[in-house]
Length: 158
Image 1 (cartoon, rainbow, N blue to C red):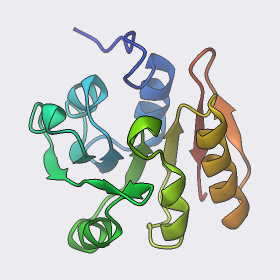
Image 2: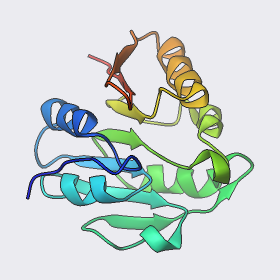
Image 3: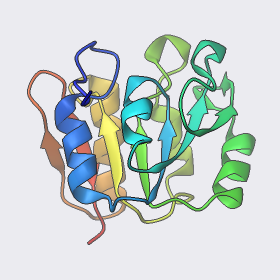
Image 4: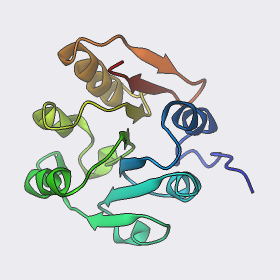
């Protein structure tokens, strides 16, 4: 069964398709948040999932890290360690939820990620759009916003 991305929580079919078009098959994707998108992407990529919710841990073919949200984003010390220990070719940002701290805390680590394609989900929301725009501005890259109802932004370095 092919991915549909229809439940509203997971990445959209449009984002899934863009990842498939832009990231080489067999590459490693580091994702913040996991769910049905993880399941679909793991058929084509090696997945590394950072997840704050134990209910979403170890459900799909991925190397999972349980990392709590503290001070507005995932525990910074643990994220730094994960970035050091793992090689990755793309990033998907789809967590944490606003209710558990939001994503703007990612800005404090803006220079610590490899220069790989980063896919920012949910940029139809003000905070997620701000995060995406700040990353593009900081890295002097053009904004690429796509999607219909559920929008996403892509940060590319080439």
